[in-house]
Image 1 (cartoon, rainbow, N blue to C red):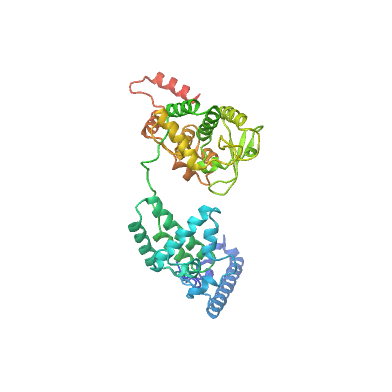
Image 2: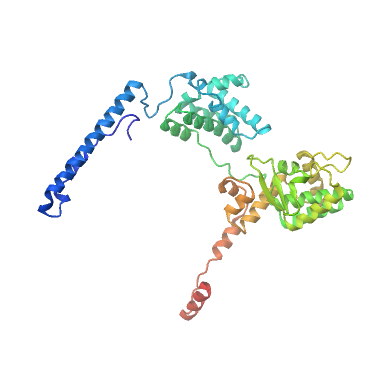
Length: 401
């Protein structure tokens, strides 16, 4: 590899051509000679062009070594409006609480890189920090400090990824070379968090017991609402934050779909409602009434405000205790949905159902154990030991059919 702005030493093409090889016979010597001169002339012109380009780069100061970064610490503030790497990085987060939380993480990372006290830097301080001049050594020290401060691997990954995203925007803005960008990302690597001891898969029996508890506890209105919540959770895999934000007009009763307008990745997502879940929803809507507002609302009062995620968790915890179901979280419905879907369908389809941008994100939800792997291997056809030749042929034909 050669530094940017310089060219590798190359042997002229004409010197590497043997005119004798271009001729099929001695009579073709003249055409071969003309072709060789044509190639040599073109090679000379290429060399002159490269020399002229290199001279221009040297005179203009635009030659960038492989590990180049803009030497001006304030260059990051001189970018056109709306192109600041920190602004672009934070702006890619979902508006609202998620963006505020991510901005806090970026500020904490900046304080660690700058060696400042926690919560001592303002937003303008973070923007003025020379992110483009972070060295590989600083990045390595930062990563070690993150691992010393935080225990959960997911938290470590979140903090390291925040710096990775700012570095990527600095490269896109032309503040550093491609090699420096790659070296920094290599130093700021993340690790898979591994299986969580808190997450789990709900069994079919547990879901049935939970629904039975919803059908027996509370007033008829509460029973209809809570059963509809469990049925929708289980058959859609949606997040609790998405469920509480569903409005009545988001449910297309003709097409039997629900439009999620406020998702984690900011994209609208269409949920295909299970036929059985439609019955639960229709019954609940009969109790709720046709008024506009949140689909799932309190059963007392006429205001159709949405239940809170904490309220949903409280409802589920009380029904789980009554049914004797072991503790679980709302997100375990999503994990259960993903695992059951992966047992029947490919990861790309399941990824689409869960509104994931990448199938790799879906596989994190896969809670299938070794039993599924054993069954998958055992499902392969293999003639048993001692089977006759005719038996093998019959089995082969049956397998092919």
